[in-house]
Amino acid sequence: MTDSTILADGTIEDRATAAHGARTRIRRHPERSVPERADEILRTGRVAHVAFAEDGQPFVLPMLYHYEDGTIYLHGAPASRTLRTLRAGTPVCVEVTLLDGLVASRDAQNHSANYRAVMVFGRAEAVTDLAEKRGVLERMTARYFPGRAAGTDYAHARDGELKAVEMVRVCADELSAKSRTGPATGPRDADPEGFGSRFVVLLPGTDA
Ligand SMILES: Cc1cc2nc3c(=O)[nH]c(=O)nc-3n(C[C@H](O)[C@H](O)[C@H](O)COP(=O)(O)OP(=O)(O)OC[C@H]3O[C@@H](n4cnc5c(N)ncnc54)[C@H](O)[C@@H]3O)c2cc1C
Picture 1 (cartoon, rainbow, N blue to C red):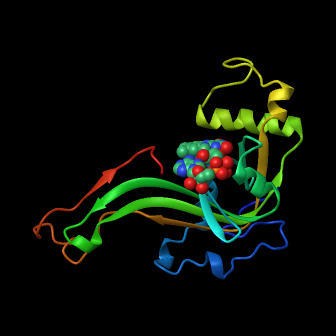
Picture 2 (cartoon, helix red, strand yellow):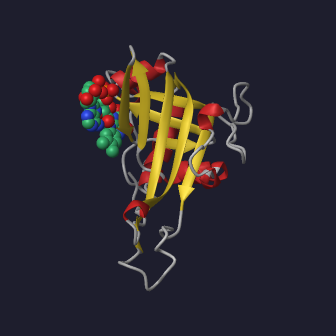
């Protein structure tokens, strides 16, 4: 899906199936629902966890990805089982997490993590146009290596090399985004003189 837009409530504009449905309703800590931040998280993330089922067997594969205009692009070898399965139109769930901090509490059960995460549900379709593939891969390279440009910092891919890359775009039907921020909030954490210690280990620029 190109030229689509993620709306503030997490729905996808211009898609008949777009809906904020039961599968993306955040039940635990609904106040942490941040669908309006989905774009930012997907633009910042480095690793996508790509999940699908094949003959009832679930798989989750870590992959690099590119994201723009509401669309996630994945690529790899044509022999990849994941890409072969996705291009056949199998339902897919793509998850991206930014791990922002580790949260230590004065209470055992209130240790936690600060994070931003997005979960996208949809289906993939093949990208076969060589110009589109080239553009996506060059913009993806610039996203992972800011400022790095084809033709200046590395040689342009040849058409044959582009043909040898399998690429799919994930057309998002629906998504959710969730974020935790701040220190621990256990029963002892509000008391600076309380037992033990509380702190947050910041993990700037990392993701998982
Ligand atoms: C950070 C990161 C980024 C990656 N980016 C890409 C990318 O952009 N494109 C790409 O094609 N591949 C990427 N990979 C590799 C990818 O995860 C798969 O290993 C690869 O794509 C083969 O996928 P497949 O569907 O053919 O798996 P298969 O070869 O069919 O997998 C068979 C079995 O091998 C095991 N396996 C496969 N991959 C992994 C794994 N990563 N870790 C542990 N066990 C595994 C599982 O048990 C799986 O069931 C990346 C891996 C990492 C860690």
